[in-house]
Image 1 (cartoon, rainbow, N blue to C red):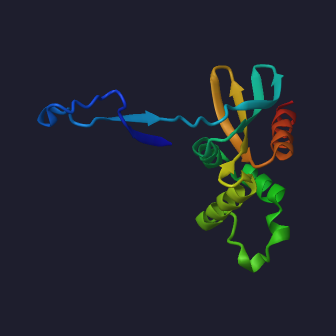
Image 2: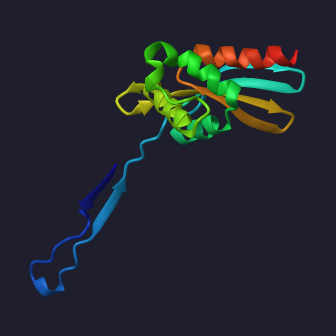
Length: 155
């Protein structure tokens, strides 16, 4: 939030009004910081590390959503219960760009905690020095289950 207030340090000289300093303004910036990411789950298997992070960053969640493959999107689709909540005629096909947009909108709606506050759980996988986000979910249990399935698939 930005507040603009008159500068209280400017003193007026009533004897010479033509010499009055111009009124200056001070801009005070109140920083609203988002909560930092929290680690909810971590598992290491060999040189691989899988983590579930809770984040409030919508852009980071969107980036993770863009990295999701078809299997991850299908997992999210079922964890959100879209097939149970909608008539099949109302839902666009999953592999269609409209289906992807629909899934993102459903994710946003499910991630809403309070008013405009959104929280996401992002599954990241690190191999050596390379890390990538593979899955994003509005709830921790489905993100943790996805993370565990990634570890089980490699073992």
